[in-house]
Length: 399
Picture 1 (cartoon, rainbow, N blue to C red):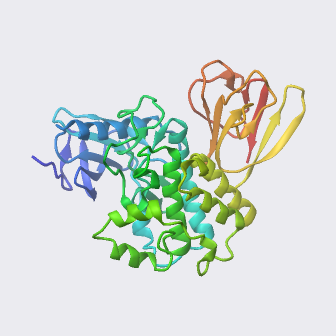
Picture 2: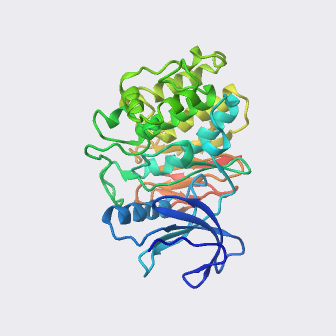
Picture 3: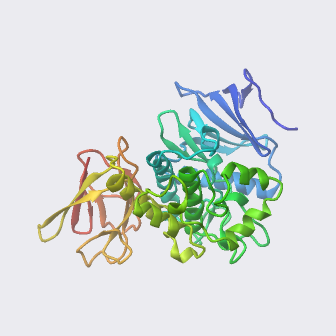
């Protein structure tokens, strides 16, 4: 029997339903009161008892991923599991606001700084997942939530997969003969290699940003986006064909977009490239591009200072923008150390901007990453007075 709870119902003897927040074919989301919490939470509950393997994998996949993420731009999970009645549940943050598609109908452009800020925060929400080897695969406006204070939360990791063999429920990011996600925000590789990686999510994020800035699609630039969506509503395969065959129109050619910052125009063009290897490789890299645009070109004070004390007692101060940064002496590290004992990336430093604090995540368990001289093996939120070390280099973030 389907489980459709109503306000006043009690589930699992202790969780009282306050209202229905969302209805889908697979699950329902409720506003609830739960013991031990002095504020309402959200309960995501499968509508039917889970009997099919794919349904169970989807639900368990989302639980596994969300429980491992610490980024403030991803919803927090307080409890989750499989109930004796066969229903899978997630007890999580109650978000007050709207999804991006409800908040904005894409009928007209957003102010550039507002559009870039929204997608920048969505990138930060994905950066940690990408660093852990997880690709979302269904980035779209319906899965970007705008809270009432303007903070962005990324939703629905139910279609996510590991792309590099790390242990996530459902380890292969490739689906044979099946398009995953939403055709409108799909990627060229869906019909070519069928292999999705973090650069695939970057493409979808860039599609959203282009549409927010212009109210047009890069694939159908001569028509308003709302008209294209209506015309293709009954033919989603036309989106897939366009992703493969239509060259994206440079956004600076569109009305109202000719004065966009050069760094933004170039960044969008790279992120929409048909070749995954030509795009920013992950959401963290795209976040760094957009963070620089916000700081340098749009005058939005998003930067802090990163202070580095090297083993030879020399000191460097550098601009520190919200983003995701690998720390080490390797070529792919955004924060490079003068320390041969740290040859590869050993930690990731992530920051989503004020008022949030930076998070430091060690990548190796060899004792070379410390906070206040204590080695760490799990992600740590850095306090205002915390110092941290990677190898012989001491660092601190000054906001």
